[in-house]
Length: 217
Image (cartoon, rainbow, N blue to C red; front, side, top):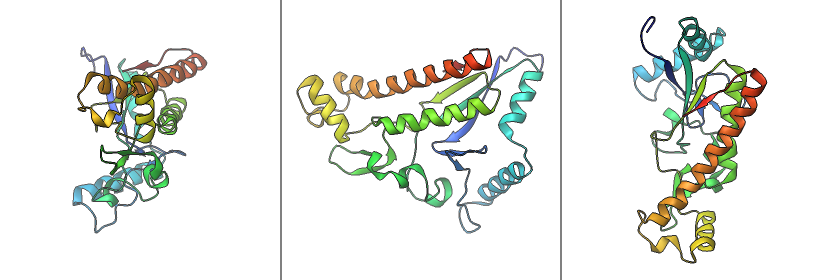
C-alpha cells in the first residue's frame, strides 16, 4: 500500500474477550486450543501468535509502526460479540472467559433461555469493552478504533434489565411485541448508543493525554 491512495489499515485485535496482544483484561488468542482441537491451521495460528508474543514481537505494535512509516493510519478493530461456551468452546473461548465468569450477564431469548453471549444491556459488559479499548489505545500507537458491530450481532436480547427498562418507557412487555417493532429496535439500540458514547469519551481522554485525536468508527 506504499504510495497508494489507501488512507488507513483496519486490523482485528479481538474476538470478543479474546485478543492477539498481551492483555491484563482479556484472554490470549486460542489459549485452550490443544493439539486434539481444531484443524492444523488453527494450531499453526495458535503457535505462531505464541511464538511472536514470547519473543516480544507484538503484531499490533509492528504493524502500527510500519503503517505510520508509510504514512498510512492504523485502526484497531474489536469484534463486539463476547461469546461463551459454544461448541467447539475450546477453539475460541477459554473456559475462564468473561461469559463463563459472569453467566448472569448473558443474553436471554424471548422465552427466557440463556444465550451464551454477553448482553450490552448490562453496564458491566459495556465497561468491560471500554476497558479493553482503553488498554490497547494506551499501550499502542493507534489512530482509530473500529467497533465491529457487523461481527456477531445481536448484542441485546430479553434480559430482565431490558424488559424492566422497556416497561418503564412504554408501559408494555417487549416480549409481547415482534422483535422488529420500531420501539423494540430503538430500545435495543439505546444500549449500543450508550456504549459508543462511553468509548468516544474514553478515546477523547486518551487522545488528549497523547496530544491527538483517536478516531472512532
